[in-house]
Amino acid sequence: MRAFIIILLFISSTSFSQNIKLYDSLLANFNYSELFETALEQVSRDSTNIVSLTYLAAAAEKQYLENIALDTWQKVVALDSNNYKALSGCKRLLLKKDQFQTALPYIKRMNDLKPGQIRNYWDLAWIKYQLEAYDQSIKWCDTSLALYSPNPMVSDLKAHNLLANEDTIAALRIWHDLTSEHYTNKYARQLTFNSAGTEWNDTVENLMKHLFKIDSLNAYLPKMHGYLLFRKKDYTDAVIMFRKSMELGDSTAFNRRFMGMSAFNSGDYSTAYTLLSSLKDVDQNNSLYYMMSVSHSRVYADTTSYALLQNTYKKFFDPPFVEGILNEISETTKSIGDKYDRRGIDNLAKDFFQIAENALYKARKIHYSNRNNLRLAMLYDIYTKDLHKALKYYRQFIENHSDTSAPNYKFTTTRVKRIKEALHFRGE
Image 1 (cartoon, rainbow, N blue to C red):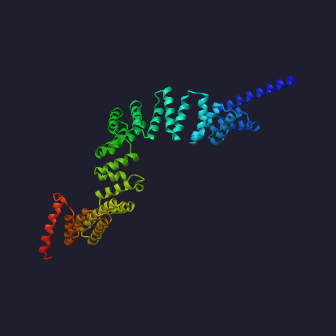
Image 2: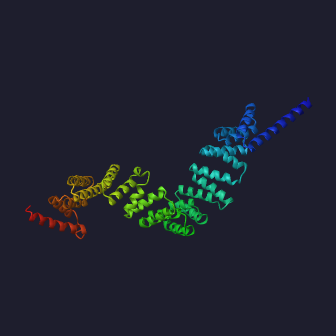
């Protein structure tokens, strides 16, 4: 009987050893499918066989059968809560699925079993950040940095936590050091975007200038410099920087968008229209569409401009802004009418002058502005030659304009005198 038991133990041990050798051979030769089937067969016979379950999970993961792999790793953990490899497998797959809360207990257990592992500190810091437990994430970042510093990746995560806690200045200090000491576009981007609008703007701008001297072929640096200038409302210099970035090969939507807005604000309407109209989402962004349509009208003032402005008018509801769009429509259709008038196409000229007049009246109704009295007066005076109406609106402008030294006031009073003389000699 004793001999029989010894034989059984020997057979079991031999079989176990042979299984591991087979599993290892299949794994080493990338025979993941055969490994999966072999391990699955063994598990179907014995669902508590941790070795077979481990290889089954590994084979499933290698074949991107992640749900099966996760379920199998979890079975191993249920059988052996100290199985570090299985804990790591659960953590890894749960993080890939962004199941941060579920992954947390596995990583805590891994940290308990093997304290001092940098990877575990990182995972804990990252998960806490994703769960918006920013103070706890900072604690794990500091724990990691105390053990292994400098670690740019951990410092960067700490800066993100500080930013989330609205401690922008502390975050900027970290990103400034990272950009200065471990210069990459990633850190330069974070530093630039978060420094804009703070007292760090000039400091970061100087750093971008310095880095560009070192890395003069990097299109990213003048782009970031241009963004800082844009935020400072230094639009002309911003255009120069964005153009330099584009010359170095960066024609991304970001560059075209901010260069286009800078060009619009600096009065370079041709460049603004060219860049903004190239953006795929321009019709989804009301502000960009406004800049694009106004830029077109300032450059071309044609029927296309009118159509663009009509579309712009439909996008806005704020009275002062709508009034401005209507004034732009009036100026554009006035120019179109003038072109037809000079070519002797009277009917079309009259139609567009009428559109200009209607737009101005609508603008006055939506949001009254004394300047619209002047615009109406000039429309009647210069384009439609209706001197009676011109005189009426010139007088209204004078009555509502208190600055008698302004050029528009002086121009208006002169035109009133001339129109009265003209009407006198015409006997009207």
